[in-house]
Image (cartoon, rainbow, N blue to C red; front, side, top):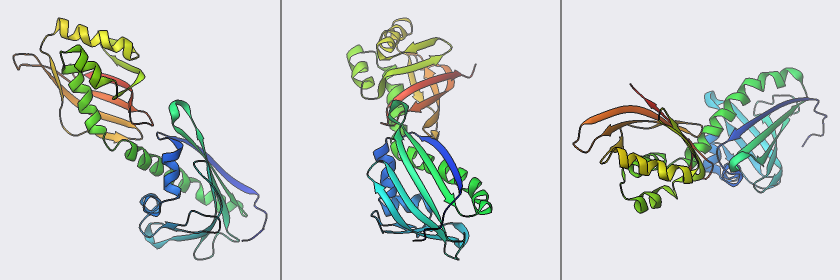
Length: 256
């Protein structure tokens, strides 16, 4: 490992909708590491372990793990397999717990040359966005089931069954907003849903089509039917998932 001074640093912070332990698995598990960087990428999660990053187009990076702290930090050398940047560089990734248990990722990439640093600015902007979405998608792997559970709870006329369905699905502080709702917390949501069934008995909500998700947010179209089967409305919900996979906030948009 070179001891050449590195004076030029690239820094970036992002919040990832997953707990630090979940994020850290991508630094210790080669299949997850490769799912981020590309096929053929590997990491040995120990001091002195070899790091290989395979970018598209055959561009390869090699390095060595300098420091690794469970659920907290990873530092490794980073050099192009073709010998650039000169004397290599050092990447440090630190994980801190953010609001609602999510992860704030701090990246520092130190270079010997200013030009090498500048060439990597957009690359890290892109790679950390890909990484954040990849990790969030793992947390949200059952997002469609959660969305269907939300609509099923709204359609459940029995209060005890409705509460049993909602409790594991949503955060205690869940927020729900649409043109008729401005709800803060599950204890506010329960009587609101009871009122729905009081004033619109037999109402049913269901997902209409596939969900779309990005960085911990999910879009899902829905359709509402009355007890006689007549369509009473359509719209789209935006679901915000927390790092534990539960729903933090839902905003409903009506089509008309």
